[in-house]
Structures are given as C-alpha cells and as structure tokens.
Amino acid sequence: MIPGTEQKRKTWLHVALFLVTLLTTTLAGALQNGVDPLSNPAAIVTGLPFAVTLMTILLVHELGHYFMSRYHGVQATLPYFIPAPSFIGTFGAFIRMESPPPDRRSLFDVAAAGPLAGLLLAIPAVVVGLRLSTITPEQGAGGIALGSSILLSLLSKLTLGILPDDANIVMHPVGFAGWIGLLVTAMNLLPVGQLDGGHVSYALLGQRHVWVSRFALVGILALGLLRWWDGWLVWGILLLIMGVRHPPPLDPYAPLDPRRRLLGWLVMIILIVTFIPAPFSFQEPEEPEELMTPQPSRPAPDRPVEGVPL
Image 1 (tube, rainbow, N blue to C red):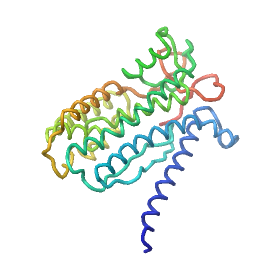
Image 2: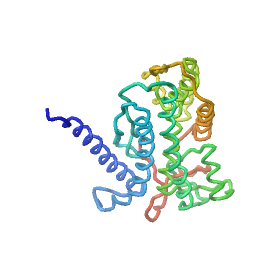
Image 3: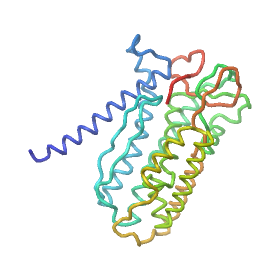
C-alpha cells in the first residue's frame, strides 16, 4: 500500500460523513418548515439556518476534544458525524482516542474542552434564536413542545423579559439548533462511563467515580421508566451496555491541581443548569400549556411542526 493512502482514506470518510450529515440536517430543517422535498426539492435550502448552526456547534464541540488531545500528545481521530433519518437529522458526532491519556489532568482537559467549546456557541445561538422567535398566546394547534432547563429559562427571561403564563415561544430554527446544542451538552456531561462527564468525574474522583456513575445511570433509567421522556430509557440502556467504569490513564494517581478541580465542579454545575428532564413532548390540539416549539425559518405555517418521529 502506498504510504499515506490509509490516512487519506480515513480523512475522506470523515469528510463524507460530515457532508452527508449536513445534507440530512438540512433536510430535517426543511421538513420542520413544512417543506415537501419530493414536490419542491429547491425549498430544501430553507433548512440551512438550522443545519449550519447545529453542525457548527457539533463541530466546535468535537474539535475542542481533538485539539486538546493533540496538545497532550493523545492520538485521536478526526470527528465522525452520524447522519440519521430523525427530526434533527443526526445522532451527533464523536472522536475516538486511540491512545490513553498520560494522566488525570490531560484526561480532564480533553473531556472538558468539548462541552465548554460547544457551549460558547450554543448559548449565543439560543439568544439569537429567541430574538428571532415568534411569541403567541395561541397554544391549541398542537405540535412538538421543547422542554426547558435552568439556563434556558434564564436566557429566555434575559432576552424576552417576563412573559405571560399562556405565552408560547415558537422557536426560530437557529434557536432550535442552539437548544439541541445545550441538550447535547447536558447529555454528554452525565457522569457515566466514558461520556465527557464520566471522564471529568473520573479525573476529579479517581476510582470513586464509579458510585457517581451508578447513581447517575439509575437516575436516567428512572426518568425513562417514569415516562418523563422515553429517550432517557434508550439512552440509559445504551450507557448500561457501555458500562459505568472508566479505564484508567497511564498515571491514575496524580491528582488534579486546584484550578482544574474548580473548573471540574463548574462543569458539573453546567450539567445541572443545562439538564432538561423532559426534552420533547407532543402537544395535543386544544390543550393549552406553556411551551417552546420549533419555528420555521420561512413564513410560519398555521401551526408548529408536529407528528414527526425523532
């Protein structure tokens, strides 16, 4: 084999997955707008505000991991994007570390860099999206309702002020992409196994992290069983299969310095303020409730997007 051929092949795989995922997220954004891609293929471009915003947040998140891995001498792949025939067009993205981190400090830096980098884009996207959103008191048409978190509620109040109890925020696609970015941040920061939060938890607590991991996993499964959101049950089962224990770095004993410990607890606070117990729900017609719903980027249809499976 010609030297470098395998590396070029891998690079093209990353590029191809990125482009395919950009296409599926653009299609998802267009479907949210009520576009029929078969009868009006050109209108698919209306999904670009959603797709570009979401893809940028995911890309920056993964590049945060990648460049911090390179900084610490950890071999890591470029981001793998996962296209999906879902309401948002993707199952996210990930990088794979091909060599163990030297110690808990490098493990912490690699794990925390992704969520923090993605958060720096997701928050402005939510703020911009809220400013572009439509606020209506009418809530009887039905559709997909977006759950809220402590951070989302705070951003809503700072951006839009205090709204009436019956207000419905019809979320602009840019804001919806930012909302997904915050949801992805929270899901990745769960202190379980080899999620970003699991890495941070291990770096902070060492082998004691396993008890935090088990407790968090039980909590996620409980949210699913109690029907807060069925997706938590699926996510919990996947995490259970992946395991709650974390493989040690080359030096598992060197503790974190005070600065990293402080940042580690800040990361855990970010999990608390971004966590959404019930991310998605379906609003039946004629049942008023305070909601956020995705808003089309073109002139709004008579009612928010509804009936599209995740």
